Amino acid sequence: MREEPVRTFEEFEEKATALLEDRKKRSETRGYFSPVLFRGQAQASWKLKTTLEQCSTKQYSLEDYYIVMRSIRSEVESCTGRRWDFPSHYSNEKDAIPNAPQGYPFMAYLRHHGFPSPLLDWTRSFYVAAFFAFQSSEGNDLNAAIYSFIEYPGTEKVGWKDQATIVGVGPYLTTHERHFRQQSQYTFCKKSLGDRYVYCSHEEAFARNNDGQDVLTKFVIPKTERVNVLDKLHMMNITAYSLFGSEESLLAYMAYKEIE
Image (cartoon, rainbow, N blue to C red; front, top):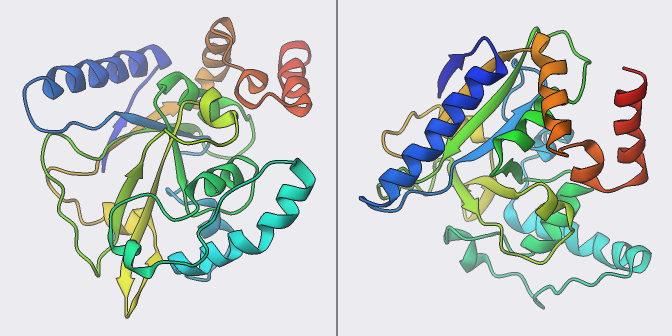
């Protein structure tokens, strides 16, 4: 990971725009260059952790978490009126393939509603990432962080069965509308442990610093830029309400506009 301090949000905008332009040029001339993804975090000192890592110290296998999803599915379906299809049995053979986890659409739905998830959420919009970095004024850090991530920077990706490997999963699925409002994409990290695959830390994969894959940049931005950032985003209609669509998010937006 490369850490890059910036003094203003405008400086970050320039660098993020340059990343997107560079990706476009490279993708026209060499290999597969995956989309540039962004993630905002309100505290620059925070690690890149999934909500499952934050909630539990247990190391879940891919099958363990699938069983959890199946166990809560009927209650979620009963309360929401939505339906999710699950295979009749879990296929361990599919775990070795770098594809979306089994039950992925339901997993994304759970992630957007606060249920602990092994998915790390990203967005294709650096402005949406900026909202998540600056929406809260809480915390002791003097800086927020916005990450950029490129899984495939024009070269093939190398994986190791028994080492942490990041897998990106795309935006094309049927799930909650927040997924589309936030221009979401996700990654998860897994490795082989004995005869099964387990979810593990993204930080573990990034620590290897593999050349030519999983390119991560951490832009550190002063939190003194918060009002400047949020006012600019509100002019673009990027607000809590536009991204979440709930009554609570509408009132959170009104609270910032009228009180803060």
